[in-house]
Structures are given as C-alpha cells and as structure tokens.
Image 1 (cartoon, rainbow, N blue to C red):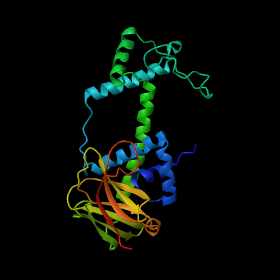
Image 2: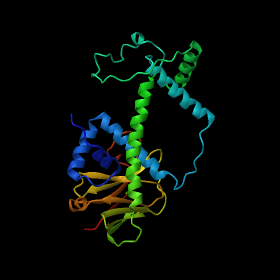
Image 3: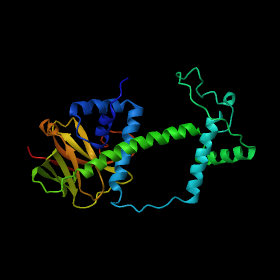
Image 4: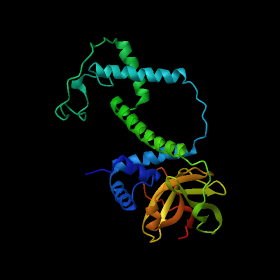
Length: 284
C-alpha cells in the first residue's frame, strides 16, 4: 500500500493549501483507512493546536535534578542494551517470545562494538527500577522509537507554522472577498473571514468577535465546497485569536467558498466532527 507523502499529510492536518483538492480528497480517503497515517495526522493537528495556543513568549527554566536523574538513568539503560542485554537486563535467550529474532530482521552492516563494561548487581537493580518507573510494561527501545516519531511530527508541524509566521506580510492588504461568520442556530454574527491577495498568493484571514469555546478539543478552520459534498481543512485556530492561512486560487475556483469553524476532539480522526460553531459563504 502506498502512503501519502509528508507534505500531503501536513496539508491535510494543518491546511497548507499547496495540494490540490482532488489530491487532498484522495489523501483523506487513504487516512480514513490507514491507522498509521491517521495517527500521524492526529499528532500533527495536536501539535499545531498546542503551537497556536502557546503564549507569544516563553520563559525558559532549567530542568530540576529529578529530571536530569531520569535522563541519566535512560542513557544508562541504553548502555546496557549496547552490551548485549535488553532493557530489563535479560540475556538474548530470555527475551519474550514476541520479540523479533535475527531471522526476522534484514541483514545489517557489521557495527563496531566497544568492550563491555561490567555492571554490579546493585547497579543493574537500580537501573531496572528506574526504567520501571518510566515505562510500565513496555520496552525501552519502543519508548525511544515513540519519542522519535513524536518529535519528528512535532518538528514538521512547528517548522511549517514558524515558516508562516516569518513570511507573514507586514503591510495591510485589501481583501478580495469577505464575509461575516454567523452561528448556525441563532444566525448571530460573531466573526468575519476575508480572502486577501499578497505577494505570495492568497491568504484566508479569520477573526472572531469573542473567544470561541473549544471544550476539551481545539478549533479548526475549513473551506466547504458549495456542492455540499466536499471540504478541506485550512488550519487550527486558537480561541479568541485572529489567524491567517495560505490558500490557493484553485480552491476558490473549484467552489470551496464556505468558511467553517468547527470544534474538534483529539480523537485521531481527520474528518469534520460535525460540530460547527460559525459559518459564512464568501461572495463570488
């Protein structure tokens, strides 16, 4: 099965606008049936929501001694792995039956191995206890892989969002089209959206008159097609904030002119939740 590229998953997760609607629909259909890609999209959206909701400035604090201690214990556990023991201090013959064997793994190039350092029983017990607190029931190597995957997804989303912030135009521009955003039940205007043209293309700006309630999830901006059957995610909106999202002229030309702000949950689903808070249709 062929998976979407990282750029296509990022576009689906945070609405980069660089992928055509037809490709976006194909990627969305793939994600609906692929747990791996769905988890990646959910992680990207979660990271984007955290970045959007973060304060503009952060005061850095030095880690506590307890944090440094856990880091040291984790690095020491990896040294044990390199000496031929697994994360629980067992010999290779004592590994669980579900652990992969050498017959299951592809051949690897010979690696230079440092001389093993003897470890006392007390040291092994201390490291086992420290690792038990960090991972109840899991393997140290699995934890490291999980952290690596999460860090890669976070870096991808943060880099994309940071790039948008850096290239945000400083001079005001005139909107090409604008519309009031109203509640679906009472039809009260509580926000506005506008399409503006910049040197790099089109941007969709969204602002609300008062903070929207994201509940235990986050707010997501969508462009719905006028045919009532298709939609694309544009990006994540921080409650009470104004945001600008790059979009393509192709989206507008193909009928994606209905701006929608929805309340989404961190459930791993890339689809629209159906819980729309505000909506408005851009004029032709």
